[in-house]
Amino acid sequence: MIRSWHFRTVLFFLLCSLGDAARAGSGFADLKPGPYGVGFRVVQQYDYARSYRDKNDPVTGKAYLGERARPVQTLVWYPAPKAGTPLRYADYMRTEATDEIFGRSAAQIAAFMAERQQWTASRVGPKQAQALLDQRMWAVANAPATTGKFPVVIYAAGGGGAAHEAADLCEYLASHGYVVLASRSLGTHTKSMNFDPEGLATQACDIRFLLSYAHTLPQADVEQVAVAGWSWGGLANALAASQDSRIDALVSFDGTQYKDLTKAVSRTRLALPWLYVQRRPESVRELSADGMETSSILLNEAKYADLYHVVMNPMEHVDFSTAALRVAQLEHFTEYSRPEVEAAYHWTCRYTLEFLNANLQGTAPGRQFLDRTPAQNGVPAHMALQYHLPAQTGPVPTQAGFAAALAQDGFAHALEIYRQVQKQDSAFVLSETDLNNWGYQLIREAHDLPAALAIFRLGTELYPSSFNLFDSLGEADELNHNTAAALTHYRRSLELNPQNRNAQQRLQVLSAPAPAMPAN
Image 1 (cartoon, rainbow, N blue to C red):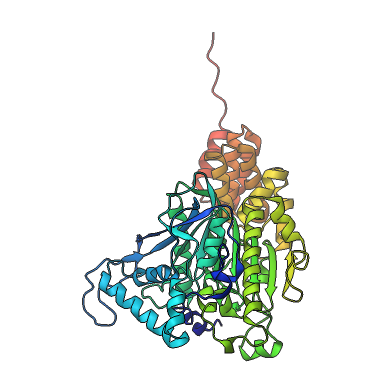
Image 2 (image 1 turned 180 degrees about the vertical axis):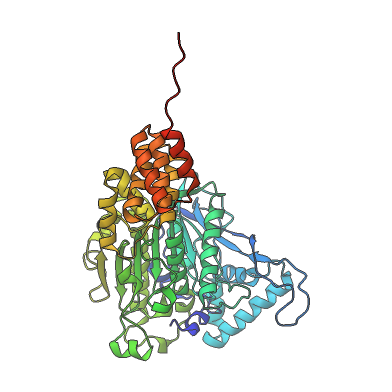
């Protein structure tokens, strides 16, 4: 399973480094800004549909008197004019002081920052610690937004991680024309993440909450939405993407490898473009030592995702968080040097940008970038490997995928296509209730009687002992003015269930002699 210490590592490592980032115009890992400036704002809001605090504090036992709804402090990066005074990295750190409790006083925030500075000084020395805190970023607080609509990216932090753990990536994407939103990875009821199914579902709900909030932003093009995230966040966004078809693309940084944590993710509903960037491959010995089960891996089982799988050889798990990478000490770099690891992070961001350009905006350069090998794109030799696993052809084995195939090939082919989908995935089954409800929806909502007849016929083929489906087919026959077929199907329904009063009544009505014509 994913080691929780990987997530905790970044909770306080929210500092910036010197080096390449100090050069004008370039960011961390020599990232180059795009054509836009970057605006940044903090929005303190609650998800009132979910509780966060219990009635009594779990530590003191005293009644909790504050707001009990779930806090979702939201960081927003967006395209803006290139003007204004940019933030210091300390400004990002400061947002962490209020990411769970919004009403903290200035004195409390100052104490929080003093603690962070003291910790940094103990790690790198007082002078360098101050330099790290003072480093200028690209974003300008509350800058005016550039006119226009821009695709949305929702970033999910690693388990327990701060919303700004990937501030460099978020700024980079915003400078290239994306609206990016992130919130802290909070546990279900405490600041500490609970690494269980409930905690996973909680973060997936946070992602959908941010998507809902994006609808309020004039700049946000909510017809083009991607989710991105690292580690636990990379798993949570896969879950969200499998649950919400409004998400058009998925980016995961070194998450979802572990079997037990991916059970909640529907393999068939993960049918979208997916960029998966992982750390260096582990040996069989390392996998065995970690107790990793390799026989069932989401990456291999998500056959309906258009998967771009990139391996960054210099990177370790924590290196996907620049909050951690910025303060990594010398002993962290073993097989690869710091410049090599930062270069790998640079290319991780570049792959993310080109993937989003290709799949949200449909740009030819983005697609061409993905179609080339890493070496052809200028990635240093032996740094990266890329595999493209195109989505499996044929209908996606869900009712929606089956319906899409019927809409394309015709509902008259329902049984043939159903068998085809079952050959692709034997687990695909539509129940009697599914088919019965679908048929009536086609009649009452879609007003498509021929399609409804086809679905009811499919139901009677699949469930020849279902009196209810034969009864429904008889009703559809009546609507189609096919009395002979209606009589046949009502009789069959009554044979299967002699107590079916509807079939009895309809047979009496349809079998009654026609009323005599009045004499002239």
